[in-house]
Length: 98
Image (tube, rainbow, N blue to C red; front, side, top):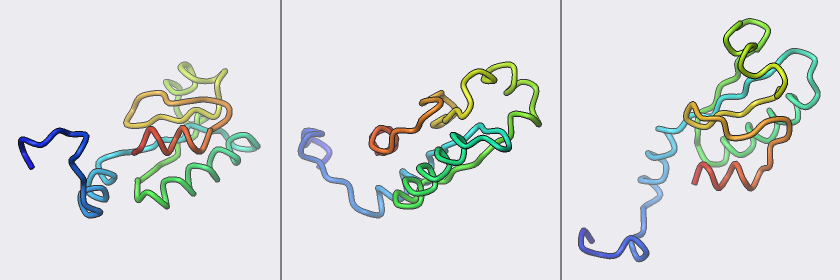
């Protein structure tokens, strides 16, 4: 399989799961934010189905996060890089994690 074109290579379910474990989704949110609640529901569903770990951080408890993202809450990071803000598109998140 080493010499095979990547187009024709298939990954096993175990390889997919192992790759998913190396990913991390971070939801940067604040208390009382309905958009944050909506984003959390999408992230919980997608990450749960794909086996990708995720975390949430409270912008009111971290000055650096506040300074960087206060106008964009909620913000979603994938592997530490900003993926989206305000509204989370489920299919776009799935593609980013695939």
